[in-house]
Length: 485
Image 1 (cartoon, rainbow, N blue to C red):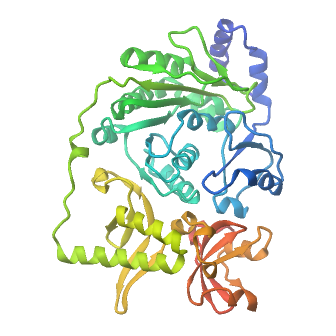
Image 2 (cartoon, rainbow, N blue to C red):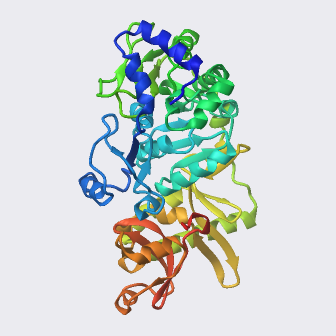
Image 3 (cartoon, helix red, strand yellow):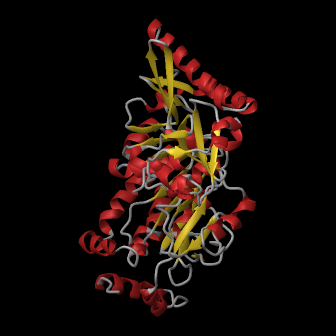
């Protein structure tokens, strides 16, 4: 492909300083067909099921070395696949799987994904949390926040708050709050040249310099939001040192309380040595079977300055509005009544405790928040934790309507057998369901389901959406905006 001359000249100078790398192989890699990656959702896919799933998807089980749940795929279209609509997997560029792996999220962490759209890294972090702790997934672009929301909901992740804010606004609210922060920084995108010709045109128009200012601002805000002892991963999909090693040189000079965390070497990932710091990682397209990527893991000293955060230490007060208190209590009872009719006894006991601990009512919408909702007052929020559904006061009482997100958050194992209807991936009725059509039932199938009740539709054992039983049919409740053509 035709590369910008300025880019070729700059990379030539780079390879003169790094004779261990072949400039010819690097330039030739831009004519290779880019590889695609598939990453399984560890919240729903069991380890022993991966090979069978890969076989059913018609792809070989070639694992991506730096991601245990990631596999290389080729000529793969996910748009019409029921498994995709059930959140079984996420299609992600292979190199882009490295940063969330390096971050090492553990259940219970407070994590910030500062540049989260479209959601590849956020869905991985959310799965690593296993429902414990909280992920704040931020995206400054309102347009890009929409696909982020959909991907989070597809994966059935509930302990996530999606914000549409600047890093500076978040910094004012969350000083020294997070113990892990991921920055997949906006960059000049040189690693995507062979995949996206628009990246070449953007580079020619703006160049790396326009991104470096943003990167410094983002790193500064992340520093103030990271708690002492916390972990920060910085990554880009570009090759220039000014956005990578030089940026980290600047950051470590500005904030000497950080150290680089070393990782074991992995096939396809090159580790840099001999600078002010060791341990940064690069994926080169001629070696790693993925696009160009840079990644580094930093840890903040335990003795670093703890920035005071008066807002977080404040305690919220329940307004003494009798009508509000009544509606909140009635709405919670409505949700619990729905869940009790749907879930097995053990699953209901667990869910009822979550509702008791995390219930928040905003208008007619119910949210389950793993952290105090007041933390996000006056911020632009796209998703407030789990969104089970909405309630309305009707003449016959309070009516709860479940959300599509709630369907994807439940598994068939949690529901009573009379409230699930499983279809094989090849069943034509499943394709019609995803198009918004009614599901026709045999007499035997209809007799196994609760009448006039919400039914969880499964593709094999994976949740895909709601329907409502009605004699010999299931009324389609798949969201109109999600239906495939």
